[in-house]
Image (cartoon, rainbow, N blue to C red; front, side, top):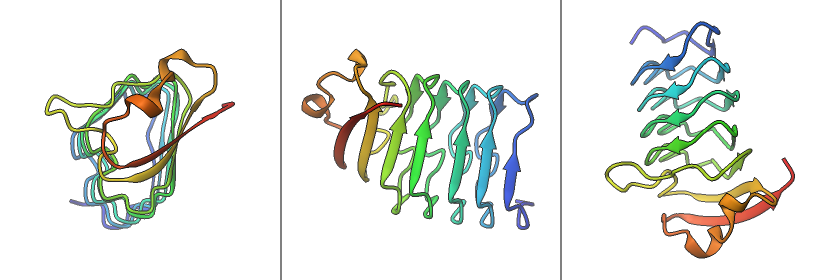
Length: 155
């Protein structure tokens, strides 16, 4: 892939979808900004970007595909905008430094067609909006693997 010198990506507002494996293996990529115009981040879009430490996803994205951010090791925190309705399996698999995910809206679907869960191999604190009924009983109903701590917060 011809992205050896790519360190930062600012996706233009004219883009509506980030295709499968679009930036996979861009080893020097450290930062991406995904604008409101993007509605889909397909599978493996940023997989194996082993130096990626900052992701900004603006409201507009509805779908995040399987292993989209696989092995983005330096990531420590991600915010999921309220527009996201579906997150496929293993989206942050092997992001071993990822410790916190902040959700801004309703609980999205967190399983894919193979019944893999979005955060199946992680130890995370998941922050969800206080007084949002879609998150009711998440602590009791979570069966997605990993070690999860759920915390209600004011977004």
